Each structure stands twice: as structure tokens, then as C-alpha cells.
Image 1: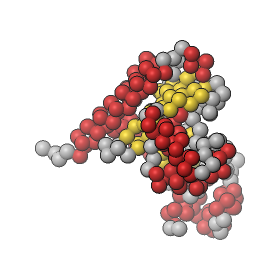
Image 2: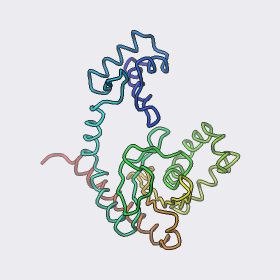
Image 3: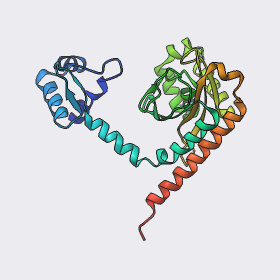
Image 4: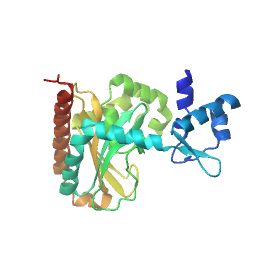
Length: 256
């Protein structure tokens, strides 16, 4: 592993469960020598990626916030998606999420809030369980078969425990059903009181980019028009794809 990767591995130790770590925690978890660990921590702190707390622990630093701001402002997908997602909120009434898969994690990259208090944090950077909920199942269903196989092999016990298939063939068959439907309705998979409908969002070459999801109180299932809501989401996803492609082409066009 390169020196850069070893240093950046420190940032991956932080999570919602462990927002603060001591230098000793970091060194122990990564099995670094004390001189190496302290050097990496000092360098990351000097650059603003770590911030030392009064009590001596460390948390992620302000440079992370600055970089995320640059990502948001420079992302053509977010620029076109936000007003479209707001339209969906106004028409459906639930929260609307845009999520992507990064490595083996499914992350929200934007969240438009609806009028209901759902009691679940859906903010930018929040991760989804890999095999539960409308968002995750929709994204996984549209992954290439080789990636589905890797996920199954890495999480076989979890897939079986969730009733998603005792074999790879059963697992991919369930995903193919979602793929054919073009959408997925999940009820109570993340929280008993919540439901969600998700549709895929694609790159221009039809590779899966992520999912557009509306999530709402499960008590609204009897009143929400599921087919109409799914069609609205699919239309919104196609608009995001089209406008994002146009924005990227404009960026790549040669200067006059």
C-alpha cells in the first residue's frame, strides 16, 4: 500500500458510530508503528483533513467540508437534479433522494425534504444498507452481472438471512424481477413506519448511475397513487439524465 493510501486510510476509520478517535485508537486499528501513525495524523491535521479536539481526540476537519462544497457546485447532475427533485416533492409530498453506488457503499448525494417528519436522516453522504430498501435494491438490480456476483459472494450470509436467495441464481432472479419492473416499492425494510419507491437513473451509455427515490410514511400507502408516483419518478429520472448529458456536452465543447 502506498504512503498516500496508508495516510488516507485514517479518514475511513471515522463514522457515525466513531466520530472522534484518539491517536492511539487510529494507530491500533490500522496497526501502524507509533512514529508512522503520528506522522500521518500530524500531516492530515496540518492540511485540515483532521481537527484535534480539546480532549485530545481527532475528528474530520474543515477541509472535508470545503471539498464537498466544491463537488456540489461543480456537479452538473446535481445542478439539474435539484429543481426536478423539488417538483417531485411538491407533487407527491414525500422526501426525495438521489443516491449513487460508490465502491461497496450506496450513498445519498442529495435530499429534498417533504412536509412529513420521517424520523430518518437522509442527508448527503448518508449510507444505505446494501440489500434493504427501495434505493439499494434498485441500484443493485441494475448493476452488471459480474458486480452482482461479487456482492453475493461477499455478503452471502446477509443475502440469505434477508430471504433474497439461497443461491446466486435465486439472488439474481430476484434482481431481474426488479429490473423488468423498472422500479421497486419497499415497505418497512429500513424502518417499519416508512415506505419508498425507487427508479434507476442511468449514464448516457445506460450504465447505472444511481436511483431516484421518494420515501414517505407507510400509512400513506392506501392514499398514494403508486403507479402514478412511479411514472412521475421515471419521468423525472429521464429528465435528469437528458439535462445532465446536455450540461456535460456543453462543458466539453471547444471554446469558440
